[in-house]
Length: 340
Ligand code: NAD
Ligand code: ZN
Image (tube, rainbow, N blue to C red; front, top):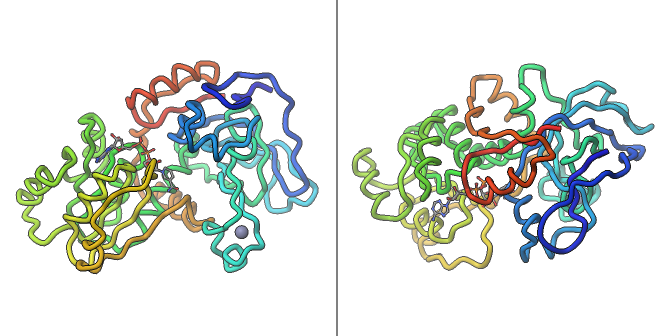
């Protein structure tokens, strides 16, 4: 089968012809139809410090995908051949304290598909049956392919009560854009989103943000004044990985505000922690998706009218992955799909 492989240390991927994986007894084999590229894939492509530490080469990359189950291991009972499934990329151990308590998203022994085991930028991928999420027919393939990042947004946004609240989102990448749409869908009042890239702000506004603004305290204070916000944001979501954005959040949050941190920082961030203390902020770190409560909510939100399709801006056949990676590196567009 053809697959995009990180063959070893260094820059780039290689489009290779490799053996089709054989599912183990608790796994399913999926024929992938659509996959999506994530910022993580760019880190692996460029082989930065994070990738050097995290990736086990050689590995087939890609962790956002949808396809059809074509083979099942002999112990798999809950999924039938022919089922259309999306992949949860975090493979958990099942026996640590959190796993046993039903909190798999907090598993200490998580192995990531497309990073530490073979992933979905390939004609076929094998994953544990427990990680294959059956997708209802109403969800089209393209949206099913991005249920993983949509799930990141859902997990973050649904962490706090948003009804009637004023929300600040920092970072209008695809996940921030989808977060804006979810905040609108569940009944937030004002949703202000920041990003230095104007096109991304316009897309976030199209999806439901009240106002997209340049990052920084001054521009945000201006917008707050025009919206009649006096006391500060009730809820904030950091979705850029920028320390400056986190500072914006800490200084403009109301007392007692709730803060969700999803964006990954490339190093340690300097922020004024006294804001957290004196304002009595609640700060929650978010990693991945709750298994599988987040998946259920994501699909239900789509079924109840959540519209995030516009975040998908480009499609390429797998063979044109270099063009797709170049587009991602340029920070242009939104979610980029690979078609198998
Ligand atoms: P992305 O890189 O496409 O989006 C980040 C956006 O932040 C960009 O549009 C960028 O212009 C903007 N930005 C940069 N500096 C900013 C600033 N000072 N203020 C406001 N915006 C600023 O990424 P994405 O795919 O949308 O993902 C969002 C973040 O979530 C990334 O940091 C990603 O690494 C992280 N992530 C975390 C998890 C998790 O499980 N915690 C999962 C997936 C992604
Ligand atoms: Zn575990």
